[in-house]
Length: 260
Image (cartoon, rainbow, N blue to C red; front, side):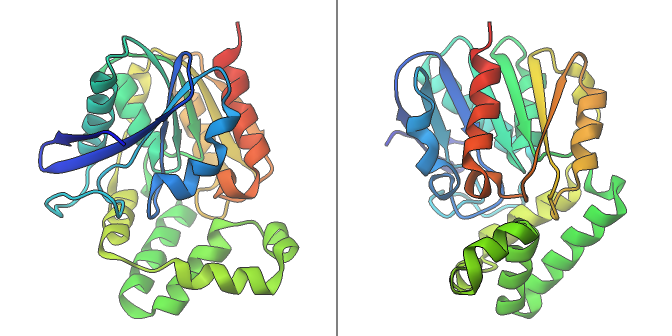
């Protein structure tokens, strides 16, 4: 797996497949492999590039607070390291505002842009502002409560009942408030990409999640309204759509980037 230095960070990235380059930008969580690893072979006809950015466990950096600009710089460094003139770019959750920053900063590099479960400013929505605030507070108070809160806000009501109690209880202890995860949550609370949205020139698809208890679907509506000429699609899923509804996640991205 290639690894590049970007400032103080050592950024690893995985490359699979052949064809036009698709870069997947992960959301809040331990690493990109958990979020996307099971899906990579399903993007047939593409070279799929999956970097781990600062705030994930594989990345060694200075531990400083995260910014959208810093993470976007890391994505761009990976693209430059590939030698790709132009890529399709898909961001999930926290990866969406990062992808917005990439597309706004280097419009010539991004051909098509897909934003899944993204947002512009958490404090613009009272539900989302309070959701992130409680999540962050639980990180300081109770690991078990943090894991349970992460589980029931990360997945839809129907999905949790479908997988059943044994699997739910297996998920909870894997969602621990590590220092890196706390850095990501702090960024989720404070990031603001509103001024960047009108600067996006790539053909853009915004995907909202109807059953999302982490990022309200209205946040995707705000992205769609602010990005010139963007398209909008809605998927019936909780927040962690790559795991809850992988077919819909793959299809939304693949169909958009492969459309004539």
